[in-house]
Amino acid sequence: MTSSSIQKILIFILFGLVVFNGCYYDDYIQKDDVEFEGDVTFSNDIIPIFNKDCNTSGCHNTGGIKPDLSSDNAYNALSNGNYINTDNPTESALYQWMKGNRATPMPVSGSVSEYNAKVLAWIKQGSLNN
Image 1 (cartoon, helix red, strand yellow):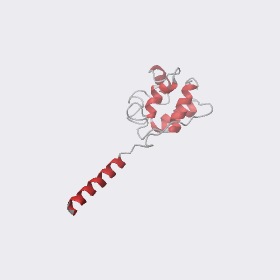
Image 2: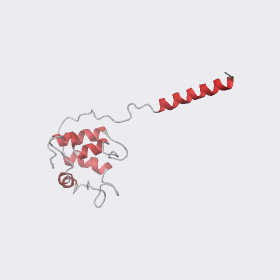
Image 3: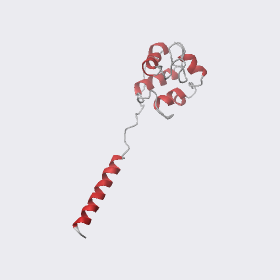
Image 4: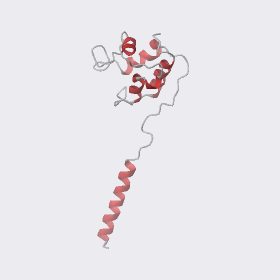
């Protein structure tokens, strides 16, 4: 073999190593093993999450994408829209969207384990309008 052929083979092997290591899939998906302990209220814990990241203009506000997560409408929109499953809280559509298991995670900036833990705890506690 010529040195040119050896160089080409080595470059090909190096390129392959870089490509395959670049495709390594590890901990890029946020894990929601955080469990929120304590009582969660809709008005004090859940609405602030929606106000910060969800019910902005063009998203889940009044007249925007369903469900309407504005402070005055969020509870009814979630309850009447089948977004909450108190029998199987982890299968609730709201929770699944927030985790990113339904295409784009909510908020679109990325799943937030603290938000997810609070929402799941609220659902497990009966998803009360409190």
